[in-house]
Image (cartoon, rainbow, N blue to C red; front, side, top):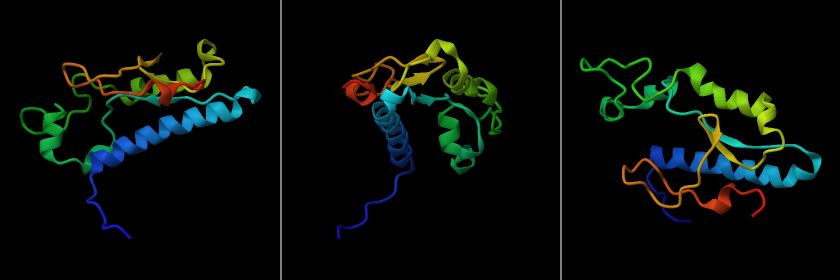
Length: 135
């Protein structure tokens, strides 16, 4: 048995997001003949109960607290819960995505595949094969 590696919350979060995408791609392949679609999505930055696990420094680095250190309901660049739900509603009910499967969506659109980090550090590499239901 190998020694336990230290737990890193952000690595675990990233792994869970990656697993969700890969699971959607696998479901899309498995059920394509049955016309069952499966996609993954990112709802965007939304202040939810998950932020209760973040310390003041993390929240401040994200711009999620004001000058007095109070958590903001909707920090600049974040979305309300209703706005964040829009992509889920689109994928569940819109005829615009009928038959679209094995894809990753954000901001009510299919996400652009990014293979290299952007200059601002905000675009993280996404392997094109990991989101293609036909690969």
